[in-house]
Every structure is written in structure tokens, then in C-alpha cells.
Length: 409
Length: 228
Image (tube, rainbow over all chains, first blue to last red; front, side, top):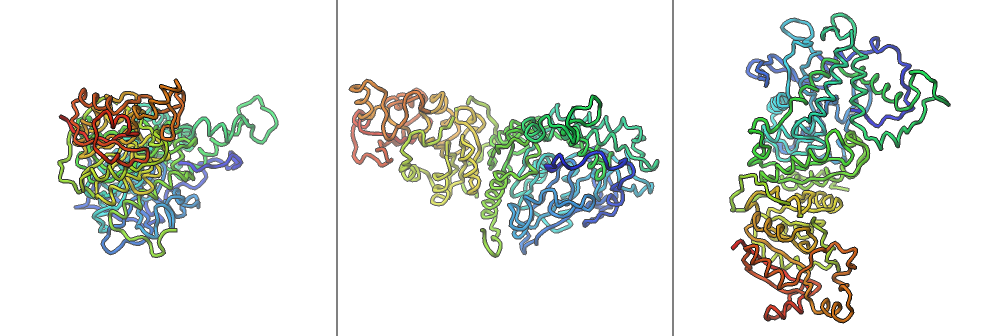
């Protein structure tokens, strides 16, 4: 999801998106580390299909300690990637959560071994619709079976097995990343010492499914989508994907934040033009968001990953009872929400907290005051940083993980 | 750090709801009752501190009694301070959120200086008895002689160092006396295991006396209750 980009970053003068770089090579041969699995490590998917072979791309930071007790898995959101705290090879920008993760940061890479993997269905090196289907030699496109949040988590678990990590000290993530955190705690409770789901929910709401459907329809309505076979035709449904991103981006913000940042300010002009050019700064900003997004994200991948979120309903496997999903959970939870987040509102987090209480699980809950909407979890929110630091410090003490050499400032 | 021998509750239970007003509600900032509460709590037990503020009591109980401690606190600042010091605390409200806890979830449930600030004290007390095997409640005694004197002679609602609010801005909406509370315990089927009258600083009134004496000279009171 987006950083707090300023309106001055210019919008429309970047040429037709079709001619710009596509994240094609990254899908098969990512700049990050990658592990390939198959055979006895084939991936059984929720839809019934077995994925064999498959691969998962990931980054790591810090050092795994001797008793392998200091590993933290960071799960990324819808359009995130494995480059949580390192430069993104496509955009050249710093890691998407480098404010939270890094040396001396709340998720301190001097103390913890941090792993972040591209999700299944993604487009930066883990098997997804932009990857080459080994059976046909062409890109998967819509031939890839649908994946779920639980499939993403299964894939991460196989990676951790491979890395020799039995127990995670913590799983941390926001938005769809938070969904994965919750799924981890339910699927592998004994492997998760602590869990930090931020701005998340135990199921995707009807309104959120609705927004996703708008996004998918925008992609599929682009004539260049070609039923998902745009790679073979040498085109890209960039306009559709950009519109999807523009619509979604609004849901990541808030009315007060938009008003504070843009108001009704005009873009590089003194007066309205009585036309459909981007008169207002907010229009220009959204167009910019849409256009930069298509450079780094695969349109089919957008369909798959949004669908995975839509299908997410943690209680469904437990007769609709969320407390049952968490029963006997040994995990320490720190649930967080933001006051102005209307995409994953506080009520969703509170429902999780309520269920955890009912299951007698160990839970903390903090609602952070912020007017920046859902995106707040990616931004500079000192309250969130203090909470994560405090929670992880307390949990590390309980787990017996030594503080970094210099101690804490 | 779950250490307790008490069995873990399994059922999710729905029940009615209450606001934990921070301990400051009672004023004075003196929380000498923490020491007394700690003496009542069994080592290694599961404890819920309702209206836990910045977690001083929980911290004390975890350090000295090795309890598995949880907190419920209304104020954002309080919750954040607690989580930052490594405590498990949920933002919530005693009137509303106790319903989320199952029966017998805790060995000890503590409601310190908060009952008088809830909307429905009786329902809150019943919830406490439902979710905790032992319930520790402390509250300011409105029957304290100085309060009586102010009302009797001044004809005004009492304002003291310990209860520094005027009637129109006090968070304490349901005052009671020690005798009132004892009557409520009977109505709510609570058995009084232990009780003591305290001065404003939370020090026990150091002699035994009949109820009516305590009801006069105790500025606050501390009770240990069980379901009868």
C-alpha cells in the first residue's frame, strides 16, 4: 500500500504505462532469496489442487540465535512484498516498513531474525499468476488455482521448516498481513509464541469484498486484460489496474486526512478548467498512485490476492465460533487498530479481542489515535511503535531472548 | 508464564456489560491499598485487574506473586503504558466488556476504586463473581464521618481531599456506604470472606470494631468476596 506521497509528485507525464517496465523477470527470478519446493513438499491448496512445484521468495534480516528462538515473521499486505526493510528492486524505494523493522527499530534486527516472504499469488518471486507454469512453459495467468490466506500461511510454514525454524518468536503484520498473523496463530498455535495483528480482521467484511470486486472488474474490463493472457499478447491492462488502485487507495485514507492534505486545492492552475483534466490535487494524486502502482504489480496477481482476502473467514472452520478458533492458544497477542480506519475498523479488532478473551487467551489491545485511516499502519505512528516495542520487549523477556549487546537506549 | 493450577475455562459466555474510571476517580493518588490487595492474592494465580490504570498493581502482583496477570483499562494512555511495560491489557469498559470473559476465567478479579463509577454496580458485581473465584473490591465509603458532616452541617454534597469532585463533574455516579455495600453483597449472593476499613491513604483502620463504627471512620473499604 501507499506511502504518504505528496501531491507535488507529478502525475500524468510518464508516458503510456504499457511501455514501462513490467515486473516480469522478478516473478520467476526475484532479486531476493528464493526457495523451490516440490515432490514431498508440494503445496496442498484449500481449493483442492496441489501445487507442485512451487517457489517462495523472501528476505531475511539479522541473525538467528543459537537456540533458534528469536525469529520474527513479518507478513505483508495486499500489494506489499518481501522487501520489508530493504530496497525494492522495482521502485528503488526503501523497504515498506523500514520505520518499524530494522536495527534499533521496534522490530529490532539487532536482536531478532526477521523473515518476510512474498505471498503465494504475489508477483515478486513467490508462485503467482505471473510466474511461469513449469508444465506449459508459459505464465500461469488464470490457470493458477485460487489461493487463500491459509494457503499463504502454509507456504510460509514450509519455508520456515526449510530454514530450520520450529517456533516463531512473533508473527507481525498489518491489514492482509494481520489476517495471516491470525491464521498463523490458529493453524500453528504451538509455533507462534506471540502475534501482532495490526489493522486487521478475522474475516473480510461485505463492504470490503465490494470494494475488491470493483477493483477486479476494473482490471477485467480493460481490453488489454485479454482474459488474463496479456503477457502473450504483449500488452498490459494498466489502465484497469490503475483505476482499481485509485479506488482502493481512497479506502486506505480518511476524509480528514484527505481534507488536511488536499482540501479542494487545484493542481498547478489558478482556476478550474471546465474540463475533465485533473483540476484538483486529489485527482492528480490518485492518478499518480494508480500509475506508479502498475509499474510494480501484476494485474492478475491483484485479482488473486484480493480474492484471497475476500475468502478469509477465520471462524468458518470452527462452526462460526471465533473463540473456538483460539481455544487453548498458547500465543500472546497484541491487537492494534486505528481510530480513523474505516476499512478495518476498531470494531473488527475488538471482535478478535473479545474472542481471545472468551478463549482465555493472553491478549493486549491498543487502539491508536490517528486520522490517517487504514494506511496509518505503514506510516510514522509513534504510538504504534511504542506499543510494538513494549509488547515485543515484554514477550522477549518472557521467552528469554537476550537484549542486543549494547542494551536498549 | 501461566503458572496456575486452576483449570482453564473453555466456554465462551455472553453476559451483560460497565466504565472503568481510572483510580484517580477516587482522588488523592494514594493507592496504599495495593499492598493490602497483594496480600490477599495467592501466588501463581490468574488475576484480572479491572481499571488497572498504568499497571502498577499488576506489575506488583507479577513481580511479587508471580501471577498470570491481565488488565482491563478504559483510558488509551493507561493501556499503552501497560502494554509498553509488557503487561497484557485490553482497552475496555467494566460496564460493557466483562461480558466477554467466560465463567471462572480468573482466580482473582480486582476492582479497585471503580465500582462507584460504573453505571450498573450490581450487574458489575455479579459479573465479577461470575468470572472470578475470588473478587477483591475497594471503594470510597460515602458514610465516612467527614462526608456526613459536610452534608449535615453545610447542606452541600461532600468534597474532600480524597473525593475532590463537585457533584456536577464527578465520575463517581453511584456512591455507597460500607453498610450499603454489605447489603448489596447479600442481594448479589456474595459471601464476604474478608473486609477492612481503610483511611484515605489505604492504610487499614487498625482495630476491630462493629460495622457502624467502620462505616463512620473508614474513608474507604476493601472486601474479599466469593460466590455464596
